[in-house]
Image (cartoon, rainbow over the protein chains, first blue to last red):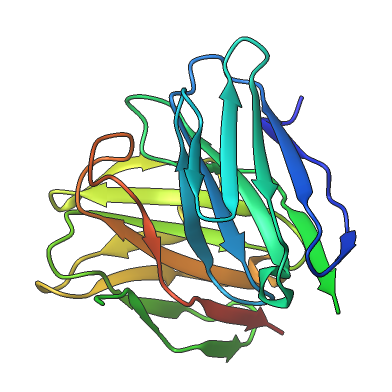
Length: 110
Length: 117
């Protein structure tokens, strides 16, 4: 079983659309959760951390469901510049490695 | 804004050769990491380094790999005898504190693309 699973996409959406990505993780001991964004052939960049109560940063909303071991990312009012691969990332307490999903590719079309 | 830097951006080498990938972490960070990403695959952890020693390593990080902090600013990854399957993007990352703690966010450098022929 993969540690972090994501729908690879691609998600092709028009500008202004709302799009949601889902992610599941296998290690129930995971405590830290993140969404990173990766542009083609570039480094991963932190988009937002995901907190138990859910959190919002502008057009981006992240949710965590520990019981289902499920994380989501909602992007509202999509912009062309949102086109990228979105990486679901988890970390287990006491360990330093980040565990990455393979990513979900988003293309926002004019 | 401070950032992690890496050199070179692209390294081409022959199979069996040694390569050294260099990184300059963010100056006040104490934890350093190497990850790799084979084209089309996920980002994979190689090794973490703290207080001048390896704190964790993955099964990918075998005897062919080593890391060093030769001075107060550089953090290097050495591959002793490269194989074709070592071709990948290698990312260095650093964090101020341990991942999971406040200020534990890992910031990634732009990567070195290693091509082994």
